[in-house]
Length: 488
Ligand SMILES: *Cc1c(COP(=O)(O)O)cnc(C)c1O
Image (cartoon, rainbow, N blue to C red; front, side, top):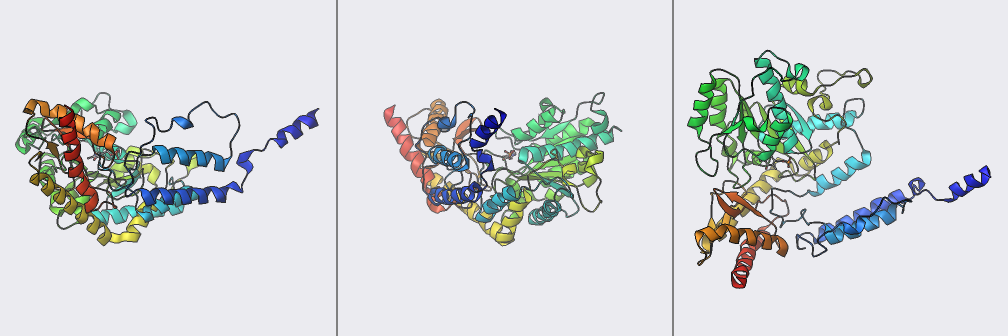
């Protein structure tokens, strides 16, 4: 009997043991991904497929396996039908880059090698590459070489990382090691910002136990622009008590910049920590034409920047930089006997990061910087800034469109304002038009509220984007706008 049971078990093929499927699986995906990307320049951003795009993949847990190739084929078909073409050049929503050829392929390689960017024993290769790539990014952005850094999943965690170092510093000012003792018994942490502050930085403060409500904003007007005098008055009123200044380089609605040099000056004068959220705006440093926007960045204490936005590496990737390696390390170091100890000139990146096991994100960053260099990135940034100005000019030429902000970098903030509708009807009209743009799918961007007005804010960040893509923005808005008006 037992022998019979055994042989019947053996008779059920276990697809996980089918090693021959590996090569075919990789080739299948390479072929299909190449095909997908060959169409991404012109395909509708929102595919015409079903509203619930992954529904065909749902159902209960499969009792038995379908095998590698069958599973991948199902996935590819569903993706063809339902995946947003956000890797393409006409996706202007949020601030989303694509993947350069070198970055995308290196990211695949990172999965194949499956290196764990934990420490120098688990993968000296990933550690050294992270050190090199972070060094290159510091050069690219003009940040001091002596700063520490680490790759994170996104700017939210990069903000978290920088602000964790700030919290450690702040605790130290009160004579407390907050990682050791916690924050109980300490006063609230004063966090001061302009109205540009990004929700992810506020989320990071929530996660750090500092609390969302500690953020006080000093805005000059409804767009959020910094009121530096009010900020200084607040710092003065703190009477020497340490505080965190939270600056934004590249605000999401219109691409505005806090005056970093002014904030650095105040931070130095009043003994505060300056953290800069430069998720996409830090790339202004890459071109002499826009570098002025981040003047003073090297006087910050910590800086966050995204990789999956303007660096155009695939999701997910960002970096945090901190002026004092010991504060960053102190915020995150963890030790246990089995993990071993390391030498000081070789940073153990898990000790600088909220994560322990980590994807080797450095492969994609290294590859894209090696492939295109400083000049390639400078040219791309300048191309995008040029495209944003082109779009702004088109908006300005159309009597039915109204630009709401200066274009300092790569975001163009405007709204539809045809003759007819009253001012108090425009918000609703623009909201409906924003939805119509998304449904249409030729180009992709939604609405925001800027200075109290519902507005569009296409952002140009994808390496593939060219003039023809950008030209579709105004055409589409005018066409769908007049259709909306005609339908009442
Ligand atoms: C996108 C963005 C973030 C959040 O970045 P994630 O990578 O989504 O975590 C933070 N700040 C600014 C200014 C951003 O544009």
